Image (cartoon, rainbow, N blue to C red):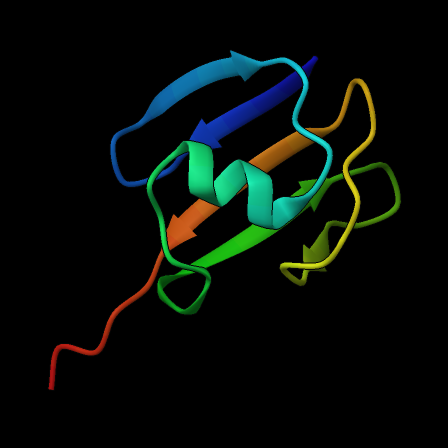
Length: 69
């Protein structure tokens, strides 16, 4: 199970059978170029790329980003 926090909506969800960041983003209908995916871990958070593999028990934070200029 992966624990996901969607920062923009202040929503927390749990997902099963999600093996990669790109699969997670597809499931959430998000584009990789429009959000940051961050693995929360002891010793400091880690920014993940779309090809990164997810592990059972991961705590993931998704932060939407966009240009407003």
